[in-house]
Image 1: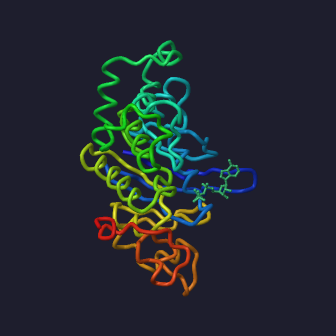
Image 2: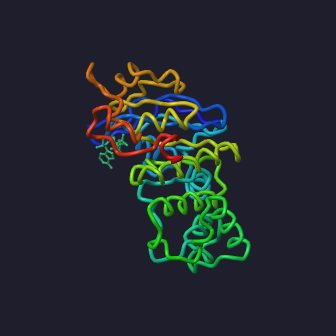
Length: 277
Ligand SMILES: Nc1ncnc2c1ncn2[C@@H]1O[C@H](COP(=O)(O)OP(=O)(O)OP(=O)(O)O)[C@@H](O)[C@H]1O
């Protein structure tokens, strides 16, 4: 479905992504992990052309999407919806309008400029919000919602684009553990029910293990791991994070009990058991 061929991005003398090649040949949930600065965001942003690649190819159904221009590029950007850490909603607009903004690329310029949505758009937006369990918030301003609710609105907006795939750039990094679980469950559900590719940058090993079918590890711009959650052993994690023998997985964990195993960097809770309480 999508093939990466020696994809490279340089910023001046810094190579953020270095000749990365891999294929995603069927709908799956892929987690990209690695320490800060490893190149995860840059890789994701190159897929939907927010960041231009320096060299290489990204083929979707045998077409190099890095060469698309104008309307074809906008169409591609609609096909791979992004979800961001900071939600990127319009705070003063109501929730349902925020969701409908996902349709803008599909409307003509006039409609886009004047923000005109039809009944059909409203109905689809409400259906998406209902699916995310927040339809009751539809008329509130986005800024009135909690972070977890806002991220669900952002996911509903992504669904409104009816994309081929969802690219989520650290979607839970700003959320408390309970909301992180709700958001990851929602992304997983979209993959399973709609059979879509979901690619998710994650800071935490346990989240990648719990939710993803496949984990890609990046280090200093290179792809250094590509395997199943089972193959992501502590040794493999050490390789990805560039840690020595004292590497402690809890330092990359969001699990509620992670702090008890010695890490001061633990972000809180997210094991399914904990979140189910
Ligand atoms: N617009 C930019 N201009 C210059 N350098 C950049 C730019 N964007 C990213 N970089 C550099 O590219 C490298 C990879 O950054 P990137 O944001 O992709 O890493 P990351 O793994 O997503 O990190 P984090 O987890 O902190 O978001 C870093 O060295 C970063 O400083």
